[in-house]
Image (tube, rainbow, N blue to C red; front, top):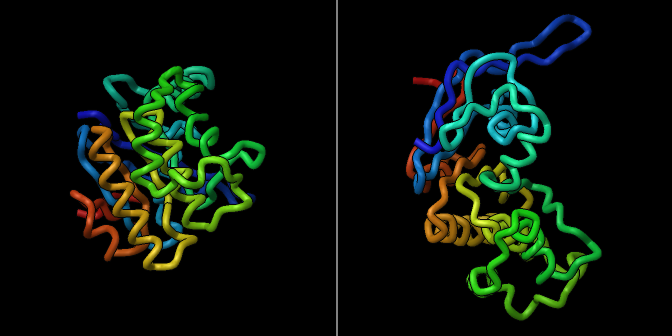
Length: 219
């Protein structure tokens, strides 16, 4: 298994004491698989994604990624995991405004030392960005910016793609088109995908589904 999460716990401190968000969560994901993570607002979906990405620290449990437990890693080790193994896609596109589309697409892959011009060009064409490479983010629509964000992530060839409501800021038709492209390109790259969504319709299109309820994976 590429990813194995075991007995994961996370609470957040408040003035009234700690509030548990995840209570012994467990799941697994193999290379080439896609998993939809669903649940009501506040159920811990984004928190779980952030823990797997090493953006937040777990209180207890294990997150085995490619055979290594990332729980307890220092900041340097977690940064290396995000650079070398994990790709992140969020609702916020987080493109670099001073870079054109071509440079934004190549940015993450260059950081990881895996820039492949041929693969990046393949992604650009597949995402409909071939004629937009010299444009800057402010000159793009929301759907086009999300496509750049997806291409930037996949250009680095991550083992695991973590996507948090990646089509949440798009209209339904554009969101469906972007999800189609993302699923196809993730499969082509041989990566695994964990996607947070509130939409049962979108979740049904992935290989598997895990539903978070009251801090646990519903059986």
